[in-house]
Image (cartoon, rainbow, N blue to C red; front, side, top):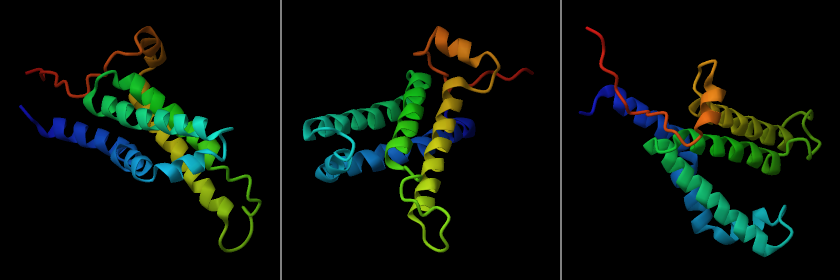
Amino acid sequence: MITLSLLIAFGLRCLLVVLFLPFSALDKIINFSGAVKQTGEFAPSVGIARALIFVGLFVEVVMSLGVITGVADRLAAFVLAGYCGTTALLWKQFWKPGDFFVRGESQARSLFWDFLKNFSLAGDFLLVTFGTSADAVRAFLADPTASSHPYRIEASPR
């Protein structure tokens, strides 16, 4: 039986991954050459840039589906948290433009806000990974592929 609680849990997980699935993944597919060019700024060769785009597509699609379905969702969220942190460090380098403290428009400040958004999203994924309990890290390390069972409804006591 579909309940409001199930719909909310599903909707929240969809909101959490909507940046990656479908939008970022679709952008990589539609604008593959542009994605390879952007990745080429950090990759030593075009072949490695292409491989990194395919890895990114895999992470964005498969891990997002894991978070949505609840299948190994904690591990999927952990991988997505790392992905968010990595992309922030590689593509949101706010310290490079040197115009952080200038009046008016600033490329550095724009990058800074994107950098923080990536790290905030990583924190959200870590909440899915570990939950909020004190022994959450131990539980994750004991069985990282276990599901958090996001759609299980416990019977309420009468």
